[in-house]
Amino acid sequence: MVWSRVTASRMVSYKRTMLMCTLGRRYFMTSGVRYGSSLVYSEYGDPEKVVQMTQQELPVVNSKQVLVKMLAATVNPADINTIQGVYAVKPSLPSIPGNEGIGEVLVLGKEAEDYFQPGDRVIPRLNAWGTWRTHAVADFTDLIKIPPDIALATGATIAVNPGTAYRMLKDFVPLKHGDTVIQNGANSAVGQAVIQIAAAWGLKTINVVRDRPSVMNLKQKLLDLGGTVVLTESEIRKSEELKAFPKPSLGLNCVSGKSGTEILRQLAPRGVMVTYGGMSRQPVTVPVGLLIFNDVALKGFWMTRWNKEHYNHPKRQEMLDDLFQLARDDLLQPPEHSLVPFDSYLVALKNAMPKDGMLGKKQILVF
Image (cartoon, rainbow, N blue to C red; front, side, top):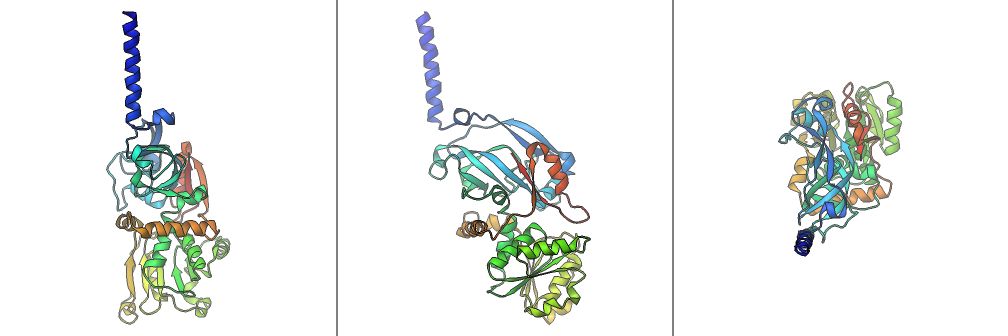
């Protein structure tokens, strides 16, 4: 009787072990990670009030999935607007925020082994993937492997803002070496990426920023990044510097309102203004004469839509490869940022909110 009980116990243990092996690698077998923490919101509203930290048991990794440990996650304006309920994307609630971040693969399902290995660094292929969490179990097809030599802050911030800058410089006007681009919001994360990418490609940039007390320091910072000219909104119409450059055929607008209209006025005939933001919360007014006599064109750009339309397109990988190479060559730096411990997420949320219509340092959650 004793022998049979021992034998039965051993058989149960053996069968359990065999079942675990046949199901593939499991997080509890290899990584020891069973629980993760996430930032979650269950209603739209003030991010500092509606976002809460929660803990969940992680699901078992199936054959098509990987377990990812997040290393860093960016807090972008789009994330804040999504939580507030004023963004174009409204995920079903409750939801984990975060479009952008970098993680490390810990555990692989069987089908993922041909594409990833433990230790690989990855970024999300999907928007609204939910990067504000310590761990995630996801289909391997929803992740993009990135080079291991890319700095953490660069990897965590490269897809959204530099991606937006890259596409706007690439897709709307056939620019050549020596051409001029004008932009407002030049000190934004996208604006800084525009300056650096344009400089690397031999393009001149006219960069417009809002008037502020410390504007000379800001001007020097943008010039150091590679900007050709930096002007305030009050200086642009009376500037003599602009006469030294050919009229820009491409304008980039993230402010809108009067600032957007002024960008239009500076364009060459048949120039194109691409709008990708509305920080002033004012519409763009288009003088009729610019349409009739200058035949200017207005376009819009949204990185979320582009990513969706190019989910597995070679252009997407080509763009990332180009951006990573610029970063390696020290021609593309991440925006000025603060690394905030995940447990101090309320600090990051507070600092990510605009103050007097202006954004401060980029907030990056680190785990």
